[in-house]
Length: 230
Length: 230
DNA sequence: CAGTTGATTGGACCGCTGGTCCACTCCCCT
DNA sequence: AGGGGAGTGGACCAGCGGTCCAATCAACTG
Image 1 (tube, chains in turn purple, orange, brown, cyan):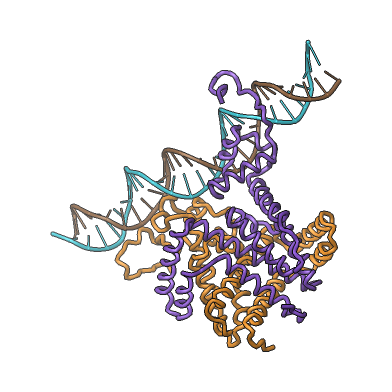
Image 2 (cartoon, helix red, strand yellow; image 1 turned 120 degrees about the vertical axis):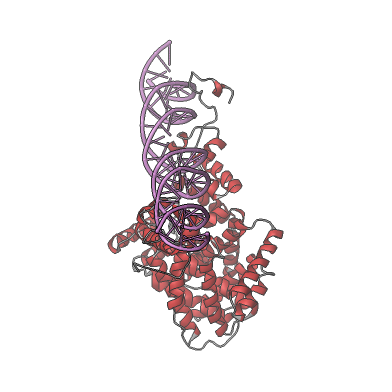
């Protein structure tokens, strides 16, 4: 930093080497503090105290950088997801792990659905698929069930992430939900919507997410006509 | 069309007056032809043969424009979704309508999950909620089931849209899936993944999507312990 | 029928973005 | 000791969303 003020000579070389890993790490930090829109090549390079051209020797693209960051977060979650004897509990644990990770890093939620074949999504697929297999699902039924489960998890996480990003703290959230409820009740005369609006207050996204997972599991087990051990 | 001489007291400046409706319409055309990344204020104004500053008197934001476009597409789908006597058939029809709409307009799939409370999503919620109510689901169970279904539909549609956008025509698609399958088989030694990779060839997104809807319906009906008439 | 007015328009302009390019620096290997 | 080449970073570019305001001209007023 001290040498950089000299106008005439070019800047000296760094001692700590730049690497793809360090860049992805910096990107995650930027994303967590500034959000997805805050991820700019300038911000990352500034965070690394380097010039902007330098990172393109390690990363081809801003999009690739974002994908790598999401992959990093998901990989970590998947690695720490310990196997459970009961496949249904394992599925719930996996789903919750992803949900919580996206709760912590909302930008992951918007990134994952962008490319269904990126490594992070494949990892999720794989782990869920194994558990479904343990549940006795196979063949096209497994394909259908896995697809449905992955889509639900990613969809729910994305929605929750979008909502959470929009309303950060808890007090504002309650206030926000109140206003939404009023809006609903006003816009829609259907009694059903009024009821839903009333329920919005005591709404717990995490519990609701898990309920969705359970609905899905029940559907898979019921549909294949298999035994549904309590 | 040429002379929309409305009783409006306001002044139509040009013979073809600029209006929010016309702007949204143009935005949809741009989105359909150039994709989401192709939606630029410049492209829209060029399409309307007008200056760029003009549209900001009708639309506050590019984001608002995008939301309005998505809302337009979804509204149309929801309007044409005729009610069915059988609520399960109605749910399937609604889900398929959304799926097909997003298949036609992939950018809608990435837009909807961005804000869970935008009008288009609320419309979907409402219509699905009514049908679930007809199925006998109520209270928090309805809340859970509706949330799960909306999240699944939006997630699946977004994933499909992302995949479809990536690989447009059918021949390239088959080739692409073949490569993906090979990649899977190579990366992942787990027999389950090999099997799934093999199934990838004869994969029909639309059918798989419907299968997911059925899994959910089965789960909802089974979970509430209700009768599941064949 | 002429004058005034204010909503509407459209292009100049700004700050910012992602990405390219290449002179330079210094580490490593001969 | 001395290249050679990988690594670096700042200048630069086209394009973006959004603001601003002089010019316009239909519609209301007198």
